[in-house]
Image 1: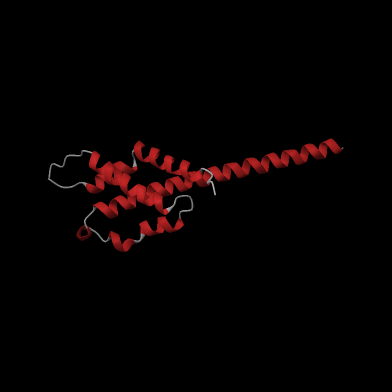
Image 2: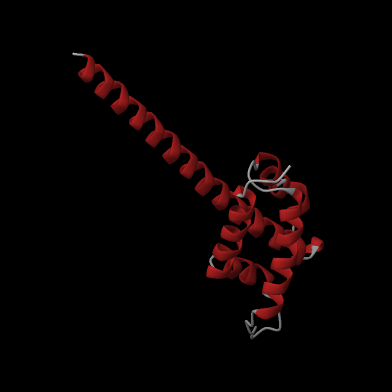
Length: 131
């Protein structure tokens, strides 16, 4: 009888640990997806002229910053630099001589480069700090 109780307790602990790790994984994935959305907002905010939109009054970029729990303010600066480099590297020709900034921001959002960049930020954020 004692071994059945031990086995039951061990089974319950395994389930709890598994659920904890899968919940943590879901949260990390959610945070990474939210940071990608933040990057899209940042791109639109920085590269679409103010007189072309009401984006600065929208508050979405600030909302993503406030609800984020994985990434830090340094990551926001790194993201700004990443967006600038990406937009300078992408070539999309306009037949009407327009900037196509929104199109470039959407391409950025869907790019493997952004996935890799956000993964690297998340990996760095998850590293234990030496304090």
